[in-house]
Image 1 (tube, rainbow, N blue to C red):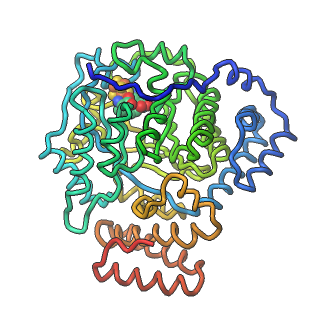
Image 2: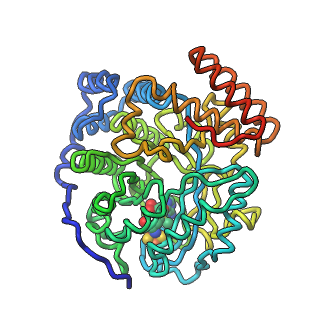
Length: 469
Ligand code: SAM
Ligand code: SF4
């Protein structure tokens, strides 16, 4: 077993009773419309206001919720959708999460950790597809030490293939102690993600029976406190939807965000809301499975509750659900996703082999097709990593709130990174659609910006890369 160094003072900021009592709020049209009005000023919502939105049941108010979320998303993020790929490094795991294809009690699962050579090959394949942003995913095991994880991160940044390079590496791994977080921070990580899975203590206990440290609810709940203590200000939280009442989980996520904001002056950089998918040997009675409509409602509610937090919708969802939900608040998606360890270099066709993968993927389209879909919906696919690389993270990330920031930085950067993709990796169909969208978008910028951007786009056509604002 790994040794953990418990230096942080732990605080249990989830009060089950309080969250349950907030779920008793009745639908009140006036109060709900007041909250819609308040969101026009782009302020984050209180827990009670979030609970008020969660009380919505009538179709008419639901439509108003979706419209408000769509508008808020447009006004804060513009038309950009950031793209990334998950890279599974290893699936050895000491924990026994009842829903996961990597859990220790599964004897039939094929265990593997990428060697340095195999990791190299995975990175090269991802770069050849056009990816610039990765999230590295690990089981929880003594071999996945902070130093091992840091080495994987450094390798991702070091491998270059043609014009390809990885510019941002996020992590989804077991929570560390403060010393461990310091080690991975040094390697230049982007966001460190830890999902609480469920904020409901009784359900947490049920689905994480042990063995393994993950059965300790508080160790996980305070993971981000330790990350902040180690100097990491870019963290991602999440809940695995389907383990308990989805409304309770939304309140848990918002409570967690408010807690981090109050205590450290910085909320989470991202929130993820994976829905439970079938996994090897998963034979669970799931009374809290979340319908597609409730999924859309939870995304829209989160958008209004935490306007400046990135919302990540993964390829666990089908292409239809992604198409239906993306406009209501999502800012990041993965594309061309392969979950098998070594899956990018192996290119196995046909059905997924669940003995080698964590769960079933819903959207198996490749990156080019996902980009084409986004373009045809009027979104600007973005590989931008500029804020992070220029130090605009944590509290500085709030520069987002400055009027004109999106138009001056984010949208042009999205177009520049899209143009790189179109030049180096795309199909002709995507290239035509991409440049046509860029042309339309440029026309909406001020004259000086247009001129400047056209010059940069011309340089990209001539072979220059990484021209960030
Ligand atoms: N092992 C680390 C941990 O548990 O924190 C790293 C991440 S785990 C590989 C990534 C996430 O996948 C988990 O936090 C969980 O939310 C999600 N996950 C696990 N099983 C799943 C399933 N059957 N369907 C959907 N998501 C699942
Ligand atoms: Fe291990 Fe993470 Fe899967 Fe739990 S969710 S079994 S900790 S890989």
